[in-house]
Length: 87
Image 1 (spheres, rainbow, N blue to C red):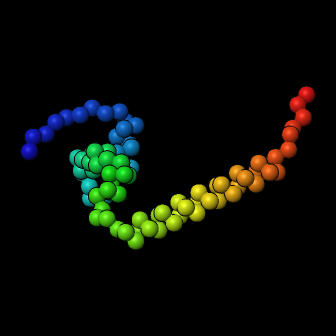
Image 2: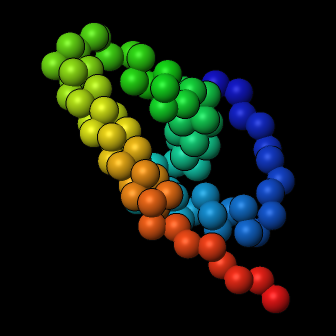
Image 3: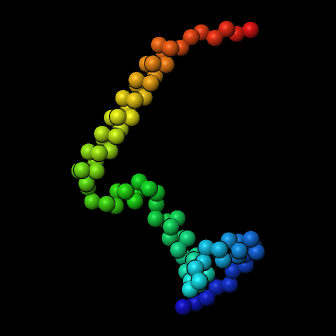
């Protein structure tokens, strides 16, 4: 395997050293960090799982409850709102 020499700041070196485990090389740390970035976002990660209808049903229940709580709270706020005197 070919090797390349990189020049990095002491701050960057220290940051990599903190992330490095005892038995891990700096090359492996850099590859691990680069791989994390290239894997995508949370949505891509979630899409990598097979469909789960039970989970989907539970998520829909939570979203419905959240929606109804928000609606009730906003209606109560409108009823209880009083004008504020300015000046």
